[in-house]
Image 1 (cartoon, rainbow, N blue to C red):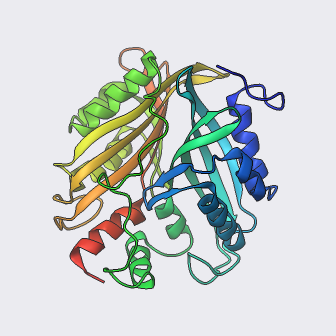
Image 2: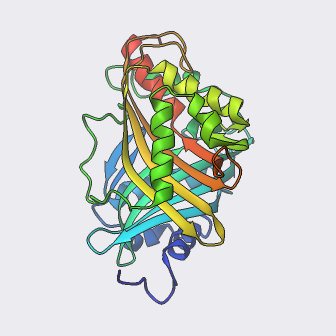
Length: 329
């Protein structure tokens, strides 16, 4: 791979540094250079194209949350000569709700939630992006709940007929990056772990997860141990039991003074046809955009165990899809 400019020694430095420069040092204009002019950006709430939309959204967020910090936890990445780099950047976002904005009148409350961003980069430029923020965790920490907030968004956007639709498999912006990650044993192990869980083999968690495993999940949920981790995944899967599970990108990685680890981008696409984390089944067509990281260690039934897992999806986007279907506003 062609290296980054002399300012950065490798991809993690580049990703962490430009994130800090944009958000904390207010270098918003640098998005004209760091992001391609026609970049597609997808989140569970929808898709956009072009760096102008990214700049506008960044300014609006910093107005509402002026002390926002983005604290890097890890950058799991792959690279190849054809597609460039793909970085899966996990970070903790902290801020104070100091001004009126998308989350309503200023509350003065603080939040701390996780974000995972997959960015395709080449020649010092990010040219494709997938992003999941834990909006459910934000809303809860600001004093609300995801279902009520989704209902408010629909009303504010003009009602069910005019409201912006969350991302669906039918209208996703075509990618510019076509890589699928890398061939690595840790990425394959995590793909197998999550695939078995999504196939309703929840006993797999007891077979392959460390007894003291910690999960950091959507809704700012902290899960300690196999039983709590099982409850999280069961709550999601039981809400959409017939939905199709798919893995879209897979990275495994060793080194960097960290545990062996993996990053997956995945989806559930189907119907809200079961009792689970989203209440009474409604028959709503729902697309769940998910992103996960996992770290492995030496304690497990076969000498290896998943010891930390980070899995995000957007509860607000899911509730919005359900409410737009039911009209229960």
